[in-house]
Image (cartoon, rainbow, N blue to C red; front, side, top):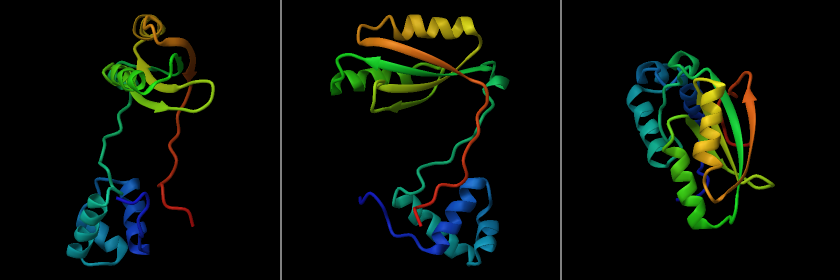
Amino acid sequence: MPDSVELSTVDLRILRLLQNDARISNKDLAAEVGIAPSTCLDRVNRLRELGVITGQRAEVDAAKLGRPLEALLFVQVRPHRRALVDSFVGHLLALPEVRAVYHLTGPDDFLAHVATASATELQRLVLDELTARDEVARVHTNLVFQHWSGGPLLPPA
């Protein structure tokens, strides 16, 4: 599958609308875009088959789930090798506090976005689940005060 795909202006309008409201009905989506519902459904299915649309998710409020403290953990591992990377990422993703993991360039190797119930729980997570591991050389923690999401992601103009 190629890294990027050719998308029509109709496809881009569909993507913009779905990214703003993934629960929009096919009928309403088709009306907004100006095409027949059957055509719209075909286009959405094509976007899924091409891997442009990779899923639909519910956004949840971590605080309402009892995890009001969010943090970004910058983690340096040594040695930085594929087998270690795969097992470390697997370990992170198995932790219920972890919301996202990014593999980075630069002085830190990973960024983990976590949500915990308290500062005590965050400390436990860092000490028991990260720095206790032999491959973890360093963890730098930044607390998240507030979070904003960007608009719909579209290809460059």
